[in-house]
Length: 234
Image 1 (tube, helix red, strand yellow):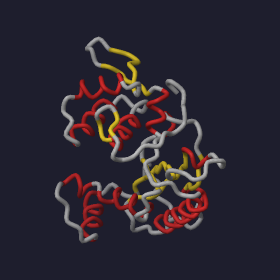
Image 2: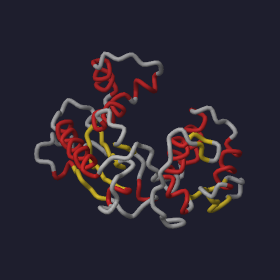
Image 3: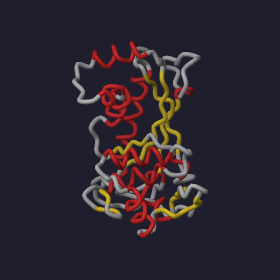
């Protein structure tokens, strides 16, 4: 892992990191180290939040010590990687401190909801795996900022009509086609969080920010789960 890992930092959602809102900065650095598509995804994320001068954003993150250049190709495009500080930002905690006892209770309830969700074959998605990471893994840390969770999901169906019918049945209205398209994914996260600000759920691959994680749920070990179709891909 580039730069190693220094452990998560605790910052407020209202903080600014290299000129970006702290939650956006955390989401951005979490993207790096995954795939060649990262530059496009990062650009889209920034533009979605009104940041169009991408060069200035990355220059500020580099100056702040969160990203560093790993390579510059023949076209001048930069491959960025996280530094030790960037890895710490990727694991940052935002929430009001909670006791470990409360964290244990939240995790147990989240796992119950994951099992209940996966038992319903009518859902278009399924929870493939849940991994915990960050300060929760250190039993000496009490209180904690929040509980960091990586969600890996899969699709029970890719049929657009089936997914659209499921979304329509929610009774919700959507301002954009993208919001409508991604409703099942957003709904799953909402179900797992159950409105708890102390559960921080990401769908980014955490392997590039930490080697320490704990699998607390896997559909392959859940006898009560409706098995996904053989053709379903995570």
